[in-house]
Image 1 (cartoon, helix red, strand yellow):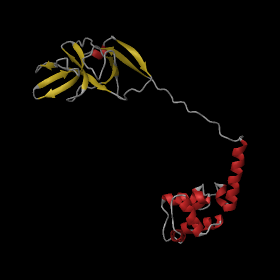
Image 2 (cartoon, one colour; image 1 turned 90 degrees about the vertical axis):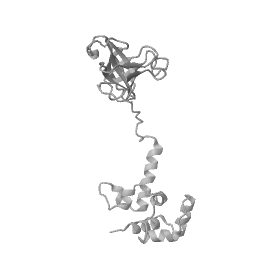
Image 3 (tube, helix red, strand yellow; image 1 turned 45 degrees about the vertical axis):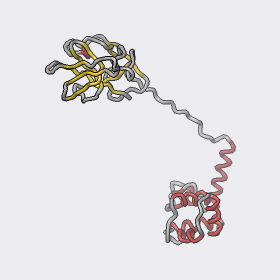
Image 4 (cartoon, helix red, strand yellow; image 1 turned 30 degrees about the vertical axis):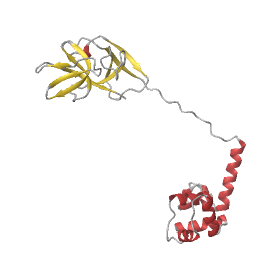
Length: 235
């Protein structure tokens, strides 16, 4: 069985290079290697690193690495050829390419456009008894651009209380969940109305905070019912 070193030796001799000449070729590739190092490779005393190995393949024209360094594969006919035969295969490939008759057709892959349809609600709306999502005051909207994977419905913001992050008329996407953490931006129902606010949970109490500092926080009294319709999610 041929060793890695013996294959390197055979490739070099087939290509007609002395070890000193191969060393000079490495220098031309800006990757200096001594003749002594090449000798050690061919005697299986050491191995070239990845960059050196790729340089060897380029110098020797060993473009099909598997057929050059692994046992002969009958499913790949070129693997049975010597260096001269392999060069003739490359020459014939060049002729086929230069004829212009055998190029594969250029196929431009079209990105498949994905669309998602959501119920779009308007804010502010009446929260009623907490059945916000069971009401009929919504429209079906289809979005072709990227939307959050975990979005369940969307809302159109009204007003500037969540400026500068959310603007009047902007559509935000919401994931349905009834528990939020401090600092989360969500959709809340309180005192018969629904709000898009940031939740503040401190020892001083619970507040619904506007990002626009011109608006005072909405304080939720102890024992008051605060409904959570979901968390605002972004792409």
